[in-house]
Length: 487
Image (cartoon, rainbow, N blue to C red):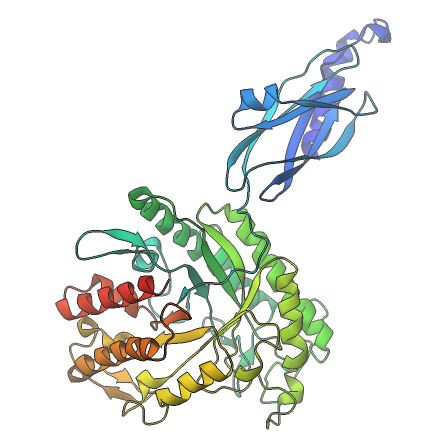
């Protein structure tokens, strides 16, 4: 509107020297300002602010000249200031276009053509699903920032024979803690619950103009320059924090109004309003990135367990997953986006993921961290549960303790209870555990039929890819070939 006011002021000043002449002799060229307000796969919507235009000519084409050649005309119903909301349909998805608009005065005097470039969205009238997803985006573990170089081994795979191809179809950004502010993003017995400012901080880290999603798009662009654009955009899935009822969940007398905006988390509806705000903000921020190779595919339930009213959990009445999960699913589906989840081994709620409206679910075997492989988390139970609940797939799990180049100089790796028990001598066995995951997936009949979600700790997948050691390189290539072969 500042520009609109400036137009009027300029036009008035341009005629001030002629005020002694008859008003009927004063003519002013029409002027327009154009703003894209929405853009789908097949249609663009735009607003035109105009002054002294009795009509508008507007067109869309691959070039400015083509847009002018295809121009339509519409009356403004006034010669003075006017605002028109217009659309242009029949466009192709994922194409670059130019919108050209010209004001035409009452006496057919033509104004300057104003042009705006835009790109249509990918055509999608379905909930996206993926055969492979890589878990990324942790900010409380060093190294903190995910830059293009760190993403590169997840984005594409250059095989030992030199052939390079696209790798993971989607990237899941999740975080459970904000150590900088000392807040938790998921329901847990201890810790202070994250408020709105922390939620926004997390979105800024991922989706800000210099955030890691921008770096992921850069990594995809670098790969595309070598091997061509992917057939479909790579998916981005954003983790949703728990809307925790209490400021300290372990203290049921602590505040329920700590989050901000006057919301009271004692109310399920208020918690949902906060979650909708988070999702809407993520959508707006992602759109502002104008990503060329990525799409915002949906959101992820960060909590690894979903207790329902019939489960034995004294805190169930404070979580209300039976109301919150279906509401989140609907909010995703209304935008043709998906809701995703990865429960821990046999976690509460895994049997009911479809009833809750969740679109894809992978179970964590948690087998990698058993002190004795399979001692606490036998794969037979994992496979049976996936089949029983008709789950989407399984998580492939490992961390730095499987990377030989990282386990030197006395470095220790944790077991499932966080005890530092694995040493450099355990690396060959741990790498074989990763291979066993892949073999179990095949033996269960999942290969080529179910999906794979990769959890590689803080940075282990990239560490394998960039390691100078043949054993690490070999495991990286085996995993990549496994993932691509499953598509």
